[in-house]
Length: 468
Image (cartoon, rainbow, N blue to C red; front, side, top):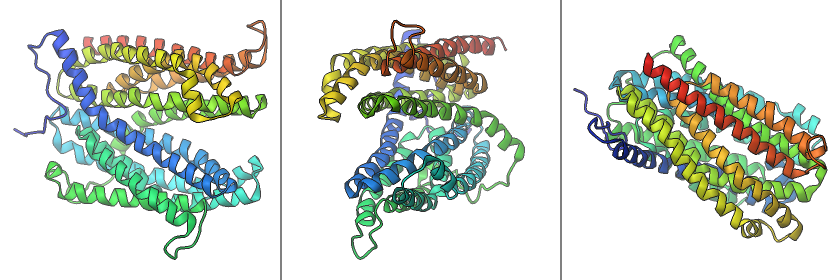
């Protein structure tokens, strides 16, 4: 019999009662999800570091790096979503004790990562037509192109890290990726300073140095991870070289069929927030700034349910592979209660502390007033957002991604954007145009639609799975 580390993914005990089993599964989610949360925050920190340090160098470099980040980030999110299919696949193989299938699956993920890297690099180094459409200032455009070209050198390492995360997270060892994410952030910070300002005899690169720092830090992280995987006893039976397999197009197609809807779903959600920011631009910089403050605040809070959702995907796929569909069904449904509990903490925290939170971001009284007002809608928004990410994460554990993608497309592009535009700029549905409040109300309506439809889909999908 193959002995597997059960530290983070224990096999459920059949004799446990419902309450005990539920609490045990929630504990497992917390153990799996906590390192994922730290890794997510570390990745967010890289963007914050680039923005702050480029902004301290010059406004032109801040603009150039900001535009560059807004161009590569949606692409990365899409490809990351495509590769995230590897995690439930590996977790399912581990649950089923089919250990011989894990490394072949990982290699197919690496091949997909290589293809994604080529596409992403080609798009980012040929970005000038997009900058021409944006009519970006020549100096800022030069920073953007230089930043993206240097950043592109690290894209193979960045996507290889995501593919290898399919192995480490899929095995339940979520601390591994957390550690190397923190390493990348620790390397990125001093490198930014050295390359932006030209220290130790190196050329002063300004915002372009942010791209070089990110690329180098990604290569440091992936190299260190590869060394660790080769030498660690925890991964003694998993070797990239000795377990190498050639491309298997049927498996690659299967991963893409599972992953592309995930990538598209993430891209749809990210693009909606970008479009809303553009729609709000005519209302003036004060409104846009207030909107961005609330968006940033709720995004930080969202990291907790997002990380738990990622852990939920891993756990459900493991339980299904381990032949415990009843526990998987119990976990999927009880996690909605856990999510609702989190949301019920978030909502009053945001509402009661809206003025304080706004003051943390800015001293401008007008911007603070807008942010505090929008925070009221953000508090309600949290409830729907937490529920939808939990339901869609559970469905991904069941490898159900296409219908959830269509639900998110309908909710964001069919409900949120049209309703938001009408509420914000017209009096068709209200006595007068609501301004930015309209879009936040529409965001809540769109996510409420998604949470209801995804929850119904989860219950029906689980029932159908139980019958088969």
